[in-house]
Length: 254
Image (cartoon, rainbow, N blue to C red; front, top):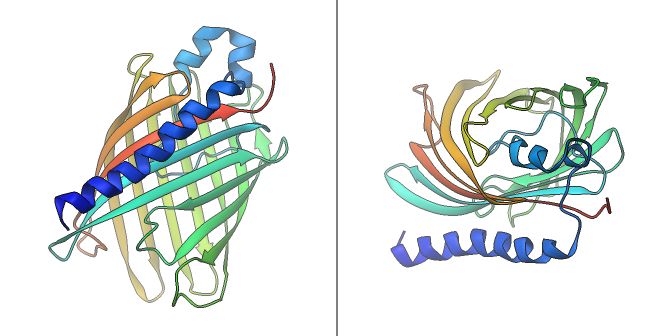
């Protein structure tokens, strides 16, 4: 892939977040936690991981959009792509996620509903069953919508967050899972570690490890850099570089 094409991929991902970052100035930017604990709570809010789902739904009226430029090495060739993950709370207990980690190369986009079943008293931790639909978004991907089930878990406090997600595809008898750990190093710097796995009856398991960090540029806007590698002999790519922007906003008036 030419350097010019790589620059276009990066510009596409970051331009979208920049526009949203400007637009969100006109709406409320303070999450419910900050309204209870003061402005310092916003500075210490633990960000979302790079790819792993949050284990609990976002509050109603709150939105999170992660967009990324993704550079992947596959069979000795470099592929540029764009990833996105939009999530919001539909009700107090139901969350919506719309995601595609490689928009140009992945033929399906994920639409997932998350149902908070157990939540801690402070609202930071809990357990949620999920129902997911993989919708064809590329020509040649067919018309079948895959249905998956699973669960998510979140364990968090003011200084760290652990998120875990498990998906099962009964049609193909395949499982996918991931887990993430995000810590607060300073009010503006957040190290991130994630692990991903997949496998099935007729497929050798694949496990990948991601390490990176996110930096809070201003309230509700972060930039992140991460590198991902397979740690099993069986792999779907050799390496992946991720440059991500993370925009959070709220339509609720405080």
